[in-house]
Length: 301
Image (cartoon, rainbow, N blue to C red):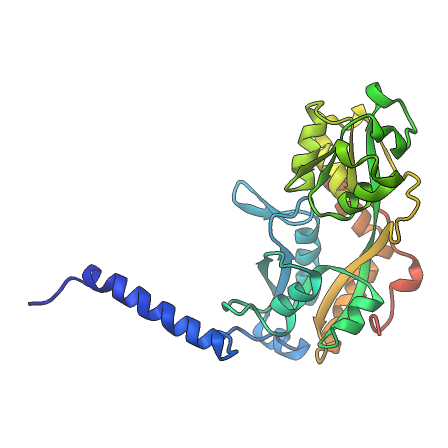
């Protein structure tokens, strides 16, 4: 008598689970697609570009469709290369080093696609030195930490010192959170309201649960779009903060520099010609361009 397939499913599931554990214990990885060179991309007629998952205003889903600043940038890159675009949503790992491994040069240990290009990568020399299997290039944004302060509660040009007496919302374990936890001798720590994302922190500020919000400019602006006029946004004195701003660019595998040069030229043109600023404006986000000195070159060495 033939047994129904469903009768074997639990046993099969346990067997597959044991095989996976054995595979991982041997230090092996599940097969993944490989990143392509510039010539291979042209021959295939398609480029795979990795963007972060659930990361507004840069890459997120609205009504099931991927939208955002980085999505628009990726589409423009594909059009300029005259190839189809394959967007890969990259889940953020513990740190950027892990993200580069998963997206560009090795792939996730559970398998999945590897991208030809990754967007929204910090353009940073120390990061580049730690990750010699990738090349960082094409900075297209200067990101910076800002504070949004409720005008009705704090007036304009309020300093962070006032948050010793008022609540301020931050994303948990973010740079803003770490800084404010120790600033002014830790006197702000008790007034920190923690949230999973900057967007959720912004919702709390809009509801009046916090008198301020602190984080990267682009994310803070997006989080407060529904009530921007109620807040004074800008950089504030942050004594002791080692890195108040940084550049954002792209990455490719280290042996695909020709692809990096081609995409870098496209990104540099977008910045110089004003298209990058137009994309940010389309999403109601202020654009701060990197210095022209960074727009052409061979990437971070």
